[in-house]
Amino acid sequence: MKTGFRAAVFLAAVLIGSLGFAGAGHSADQQKSPAKAATPGTKETKLDANGKMAVIATRHGKIKIKFLPELAPKHVESMTDLIKKGFYNGTTFHRVIPGFMIQGGDPNSKDPDARHMHGTGGPGYTVKAEFNARSHKRGIVSMARSGHPDSAGSQFFICVADATFLDGQYTVFGEVVEGMDVADKIVSEPRDRNDNPNERVEMTITLE
Image 1 (cartoon, rainbow, N blue to C red):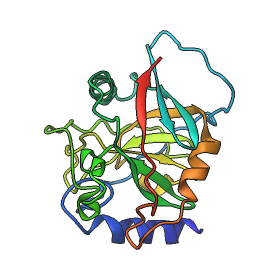
Image 2: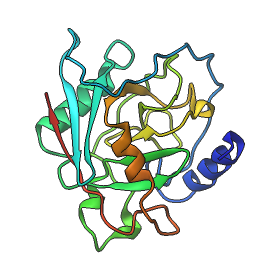
Image 3: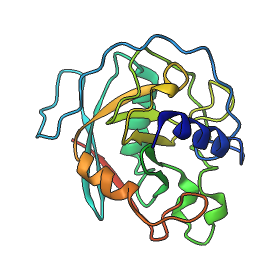
């Protein structure tokens, strides 16, 4: 899928709904020049001095995410707090677009009978934007938001392909260090017209 087409799909999707990357108004800021990012690995990675690692367990396997608190300390703090509370357990990857990204973390997605609400929920608070120079390359983990820059909550997305047109507009706070093959399986799930997988892809997130 060409980058221009991915951008068009993205912009069309975010202009529908009320909250979050999956369905909300979006106001693009001027893009910042992205710094070169290391390509996320696939081998077992040890924790570094920055703290713990998030492990997302799904029916396709596990995805391990290294946090980047030096880039987005408030976003990392918020997500780790939510993980400790079990907030994400039972939520789904409710939006998957091949050649682009997979998105999850909406508490509304815990209800399988409310698919029309998937992508509109959050934790009840927002986090101020921490836009940074890390580019949205394959394996990067970034926060979803609505049209206001400071509207990120609990929803996040994992890039399954380079999406540099998002640089400077969304807060990168982590990178996948193991399990991109799992992300590739998730993004290939058959989906409805809202890009919500036909079969639920539930997650449980823990810290290691």
